[in-house]
Length: 91
Length: 281
Image (cartoon, rainbow over all chains, first blue to last red; front, side):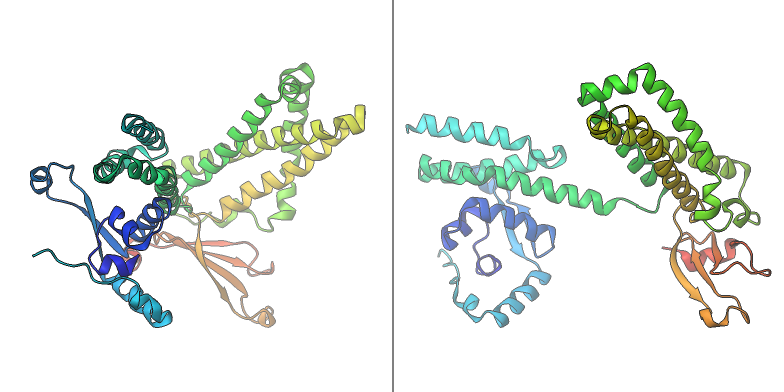
């Protein structure tokens, strides 16, 4: 999950899409990681969300501690590095 | 399933799961989930139903983390924490007594009143046992402390509250134990109550006094950072003691490992305000 967040997938539903994990796994894990200081969540700018006619979403990003933890995990489990591809940025 | 049914199901789940989330986090939690669910519902109502499967597990996780944070924030050394734990034990035992009609009737009957009277007598009789179980006098240790009258008064009030709560809890516990064996023992169960009463009271009263001795007389917080002074083999040549300190810097408690003519009782060394800099947080 840290890997997917680092690659730019920044909210629960998006991570579910990439990892194929159920919501009952993704959201509790996000809470735990936020509690442990590995990720931090922030609300999206309301005006931007209203322009797109949807409620504002909570985005998560990896903190410094999270990046360190991810680096450790990638060292221990090399396959993690190949797990999620970087999110394609819209032009 | 029609889209309308999907939305109704999702809404019902969200509403029910929200009750599991602590009140302080509820609004933010609900807002986040509404955003996620509405995004899923735009793609397909069935997708929103599948996403809503995680609502309860997420709510439980938020509650668990909240409880863990609250437990971590408890100051276990403070006297309030001690009284809260004792009150909690007493409340649990009272509720357990009220839940079983037989126990409730036993406690409220004339027999129960008599048993409680016996129990109080046993608690008073258990007081001398503290001389054996807690080796050194609780009061003598603090004879040199610089506590004000208000602090001394609060120290005695704290001890009294501990004694009352622990003796009452012991009484209810003894009644429960007696009730469990009443069928087996018949009329002999009264002796079991007396035996339990004596045993529980000795434990409770000696704990109350020992705990009191392990607290700072100024702020009533538990002493910590126990340090051994002198090796045991030097007991005849030098002091062999344990030293504990108040983490707020009010003083140190020296407790001899063996009672000797020159170091008979625990000694409280009051530190003046010049030491406060060292203990600043």
